[in-house]
Amino acid sequence: MQSKALEILVGLFVCLGVAAIFVLTFRVASLDSVGNGDTYAVTASFGNIGGLKAGSAVTMAGVKIGRVRSIEIDPDTFEARVTLDISERFNRIPEDSSAKILTAGLLGEQYIGLEPGGMDEHLSDGSELMLTQGALVLENLIGQFLAGQGEGEDDKLADAIGKLADSLAASKGDKP
Image (cartoon, rainbow, N blue to C red; front, side, top):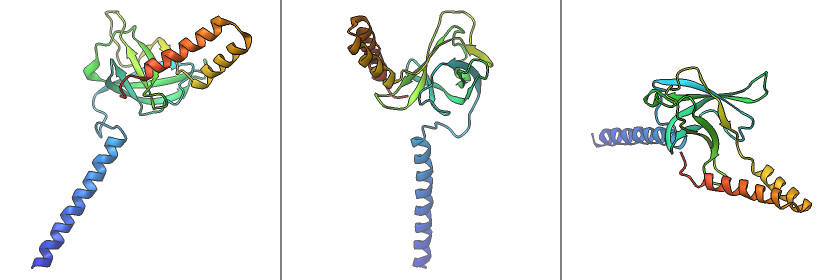
């Protein structure tokens, strides 16, 4: 009788362990829920998306409001066309809002940050964000810095250092 109770206890313990691993997997993958819930799709075009990938966070003022659904190349402009799934709870985002690709930390994962505009019209399913800023590529900044050093032009050096400072300031924000 005692061995049967022990077997049930061990089985319960194994089930709890499997459930804990399941929950931990979704936490590590930054998935808040298994289902998508009610969302609406918005698109944006970027010249360079860096390391952005499907499933990356979409934030506004540091609050996660959605996820990147898909990334593809626009065959006409050869830009990256990014489709965002934004939660229906955030259905009053102005239509003239802008989107930037930001980095969590200096070398962390990339995500999209939205900055609200001032229009009375709001984004809806199928809207397109017209104001975008692509990813800041660290290698390009270093190349600009080195090129500016060789030419001796203070304006190019100052511009490259300013861009590097801006990217470091943007990366100090909280991770989404």
